[in-house]
Image (cartoon, rainbow, N blue to C red; front, side, top):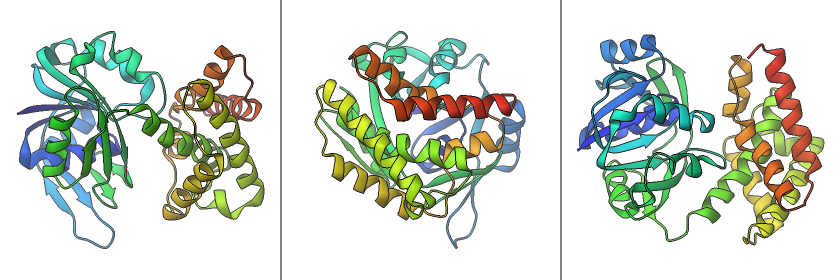
Length: 300
């Protein structure tokens, strides 16, 4: 199987490393420097207290003349979905299945402009992975993957071969929202205050804000036809924050390194969705504006 992975961040590297023994993997990077580093010295995985494990994986640069793939994994930032598919039209043949493992809202509609629904799989991944440099990443475990779409079970079977807790579900949207809730509460607060995830539950003011974020988000989900228990959702946020207490969120890392964040696909998307239902979400709107201001201050 020819497997092309678009995006060589933490999740893209995790998937490339894990799936390399089971597929012919091509990892597509945004920068030529990263592609060369991985091709020349291998992709290095480190675990907590474990030895470094290096696998040599073929790489390419986005925009190169890439061949068609049997399976494409989208592991880019939500806002890069359209641009990366447009820049690499050759990867999608008449039978190619495209799988998204992205955060936020709206990427499924963007993918639909390029790939028909019967060949699209939308998924969520939960795991603790962090890129350390161009060719190495740290993984706390393979992680949990849930997938929805006509080809979901076949894709899940491949991930199970690689040691993931992977499964197909008949309705993926509730699971997308469950992960969205966690990102809505943890990412902007840790990014704006430059603190690790655990501070969300340790700081009463931050926890109060997180609770307000969730209250608003559950209301918007209800308007979308999905019912969630607010207390249960907030408990899930707390459990994730405690389990990753020493880690820094991807949004915090993006601000730290002067990169664009995914705020528009998270709290920003929720704010826009609320408006379409005639609702207001002032806390989420305020966080969106604050992250945009922080991005501008970093000259992104």
